[in-house]
Structures are given as C-alpha cells and as structure tokens.
Image 1: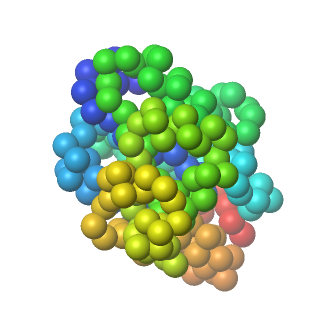
Image 2 (image 1 turned 135 degrees about the vertical axis):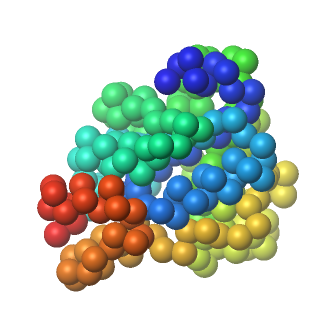
Image 3 (image 1 turned 45 degrees about the vertical axis):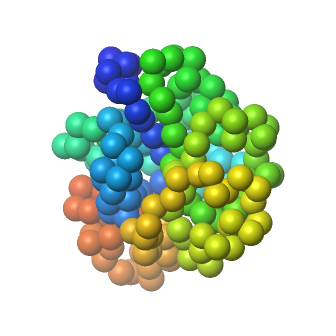
Length: 202
C-alpha cells in the first residue's frame, strides 16, 4: 500500500467497523473523492472499536476480506490492516498519527458519519485530533448537519457531503440477513457471496 499512498497528495482515511461493508460505503467514497479532489481513500477496518458492542462484530479477518472484495477493481481505493494488526482497541488519534508519520507528503482527511462526529468530544484526544486534520462528514439518520453544528464546536469548519448516500446501515443489513433476506443488492455480489459462503450474521 505504501507506494500508492506516497503518490497521493490528498487522501482520506475511512475508518469503521465495516460489519459488513456495503455498496453505500463504496458510493460514498466515490462521491467524496470526486467532490474534494482526493487521490486515494484508505479503508481502515477496526479491530474492536471502543464505541461498538463487540458481540455483533464478526472476526476482523472476515471484515477485512469483505472490504477487499467491496473495493476490488477500484485502484483509487486502498485497504490498511493497521488497526487489525494492532489487535487492540481502535482509537482514531493513533491511526491518524500513524498515517501522517508514514506518509508525510500526503494531506490527510478523516471520513466519518455525522452520528459519530456528534460524539467527537468523547473520542480520545479529540482536541488534538481536530487540530491535526479536517473531517469529511456525511449525514446519517437522526443526525442532520444542523443538529451537529449546534452541538459540536468547530463542526462548521469541517467538510460536509451534501447528501447521505448510505441510506441503509450495516446493522439493518445484519438484521435482515438474520430474517432470511437476500442482501446482494445492498452489499454487492462479491461481498454477498462471501457472507453466504461463511454463513455470517445468521
């Protein structure tokens, strides 16, 4: 991955559980890349995120493989196993510092949902994090831009996507898989085949 990031002047770190990754993640990344003229987007699956209930999170190996399948064929999208290899709680500040030190010639952004950014003050070293880079925020259900702007100091200085392209959440997908629904359209063919093959989220 290194040589590809070294060539990037502007890149976004797209951190998340990706449990599972779905077509909304892919479309969002495409939209953000075009809107903000980014060279690369780096998907960083978390090992065990501190704000999630770990009981529903499938093994990191599966989530990494599904992300690989989701972004396969898109050369501007990369995947990093940095957080997975650490095998510890995933804190954004540590991930951001890692990429900035590894690739000093690249200007980094961090891509996240408005629901997560709403709680930014609870993140580890959030004040330092907000000084290190700008966030690109996409609106999520129940957390419109206006609500976040009122609650979070500095939110107006961040970059925002105009519309939410993720109209379905990973939790909705898991719930519908348990109910026996076919989610090929939502996850994409390759990811769905993997979910079926491994019997995930049953």
